[in-house]
Length: 368
Ligand SMILES: [Mg+2]
Image 1 (tube, helix red, strand yellow):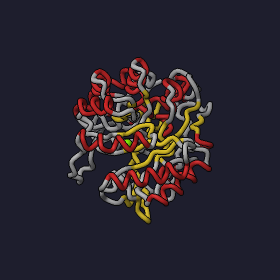
Image 2 (cartoon, helix red, strand yellow):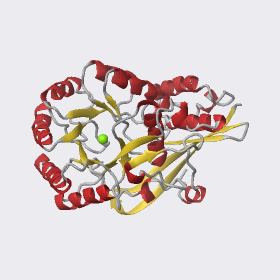
Image 3 (cartoon, protein in one colour):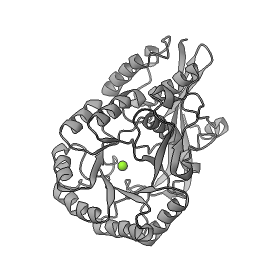
Image 4 (spheres, helix red, strand yellow):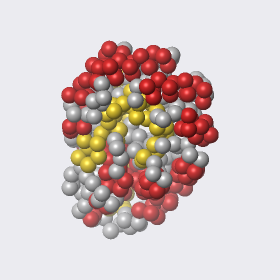
């Protein structure tokens, strides 16, 4: 079998009302999706999505005519493109989907078959008043979730703690709570400075008292020593790495003792092929590997296949904060949204990633 074409299309789904993501100072009025299709001479097509594939144009010939199953070879080419141009990892996802369809196996089995299930945590995305956030937490509980991630970014961290405390008071110990400080990186238009170690330590103290499971991105992604020190100073787990671009940086983060929880995302960093290695590295060091998944349902399910099949994790991110971030918005490109019923990702026996595109919706939202 040979790869005959790689087709990339861009789509935009408009929102009204907008989504105020806690980590973005600009309200979001649309959600763009890049769909990557890898076609073969046998009529089988693999599908991927995630990043915008910036810098891929002109490199198609490096894949056309090749055996689609040579995934390690393709990964090396993508790593080179990542270095010289942009992040084109959705193609790796499409190749894994294709490999599953060629062999008639779901990706979670090809990746090790450890399990077809991983527990989900409800990952909220917008900043709400304490009493409203407590209500949302109760809805998550009623839907079967046992864990929830809360966003910090209200300007004064004491207000963030008040929102967290309201949730803890409402749900007691029935929900495991994580906190995302979002200090690791900024949007292009945001010039705010990240926290210092002392800033983060001040926040970590009340998180300990409120029994927070992990504190995510408390410091800039390059502050390896700060994270390592913070990790020693608090019993809250320190999480990070969602936008760290190079695999060797994870090796360094592990060696420097910076993180308890590693969170790279297959749709943004390294693809499934690269992060399979990071996941194993994390296990060898007795660390938690649980990918960031804040893209669309294709990225969510790809991370679920890797985590369930190869490493296992206490919880995996389920981006979900309706109505601003419901499945209708997140997964508009899919015939069936990727759900976490009763608080679990449950993967099927369908070959590949097990997803189907909504072609009519894709036609209606096509912008390129
Ligand atoms: Mg995060």
